[in-house]
Length: 252
Length: 188
Image (tube, rainbow over the protein chains, first blue to last red):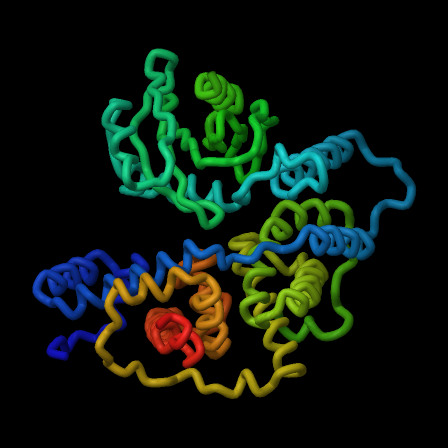
């Protein structure tokens, strides 16, 4: 052990939590220190194992139901239903939000497996938000589908369909790899005016579905569908009609 | 969670609170469950504790004045887990946290990749860590929390989150690559 650097710094670097100066210093150190380079490689390997092994355990559906019932029991709902008009609107909106969120998040029991997804809403929103951070949008930046498509080769165990829709107002601006629900997914990045639409693509064994009704949370909207052995989810802060238009183009 | 947590003092919640809670806090139930699952190492116990934490959060929901709802909830979940552990498995909390970070030759990335590719082994290795190491890893790697969020959830100073993670990762590497004798035998 010749390296006298405090190894703790390596973790701040790995986690992206160092300030710019310290990060640059550490990178400089890495150029000459093989021990730290190896150690960093080990930490990256460990991290990717942790994140890819499906260790995340989601709450069972029954628990969610039980908690909702308990919450209702703890709530003083108005005894006489004489709610002012604006409150009805709020109630209706709440029901809508709850219905759409639960439709998307909950595995539907029995026959309706069409609308369940192998990833959660939180994951796609996180992935979308993360992609908007500087430098995170694309791993391969190109408006050329013939550049983006081969880029995915060898990085994934499947070949995502890559199409550019510049003529229709949705130029392809690049591609990226993400991990959703413990699986690698291909992410296609489209621009819509000044906004970004991320389309996550992963293989599925389930049957085709139509383009499902939109989901909405935290100001982001998404559409989900399955088509020819691929699972798609398009998410953005643009209006749902734009997302739907792109979904239809991809669906063809 | 202060003194008002004890006994009475909670507000009566109405339909509006319920709707806000549904929107802001309930979406983080998976995060709550995942953290308690890894702290308690049991899905069954975690169901009880996650539910208790969620109801407790609701009871004191009027004390939540915006901000990071996930961190707020996870702080309550964590406290509820530790209370449960103190009562049911006090031995697990007796490991000391401030262990020195010993410089040691790092395990090669390749060896780690092989050890880490086995979900069962990874899961068991994580479970052998003391809860205070386990929780920072779960929050960082599974929940994707920032250092600031980890500090607020676990009540450790933000300046020590980095070293806590360094120690936790070192422990995990060691647990992963020092397999049990049976496992070593099986792999021969």
